[in-house]
Image 1 (cartoon, rainbow, N blue to C red):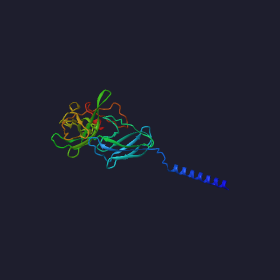
Image 2: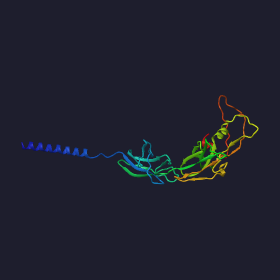
Image 3: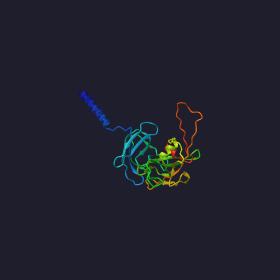
Image 4: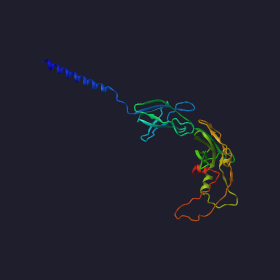
Length: 287
């Protein structure tokens, strides 16, 4: 009898111990398999928080790209990210799109390494504000010129030759005013009459030549140069507002070039384009 009681008590203690061990394991939190990232986006020049900033957290080895947007305090969060190496980029109106950790004009940013269970906090992302270039395009009488194209040209080199590409473009309104937002850098500014460009590049004028010489508006490089060699470089610092960058358009004698294709292709339309060798504004506007 006593032996049976002992066995029963032993069984009860064993069951209780097993239950307690099981409950202890259930109460223990499981190790997280993901990571999290939190931070804040501010202006590099003022330090002010930037709301409505779009961020992308892109894995370097492929996989799902995560997105987030900053709140009114400039804060953002990626609560569940798979472990790995990432690149974080941010984009906002009026600011240069850039990766986190980029320095100077480099497009390469820092690599963020996230491990399982890691909580990366208080990351500060400093965005570089664009420069704003504005002014007017005026005709030879000082009146505002509407529908004129203003192009901000970025210098570069290709195959050892200096080339210019468009860093920003704007069209003038009825008052002749324009405004272009560009990243910080050194540029040339050029303005052209869209009507003159299209007529010259696409042969829009089909009327026969008259007795009087034809005239057309020529491209003007800031401040008043007919070509790139006489243009004054414009230095646009981050966050700068360059106002009063006005153009004064002038008319020059126009020439007509005509001819005939030696081997036209039946059923196909062929365009012949005559572009000045010293001008890059037509190429920049992709007319």
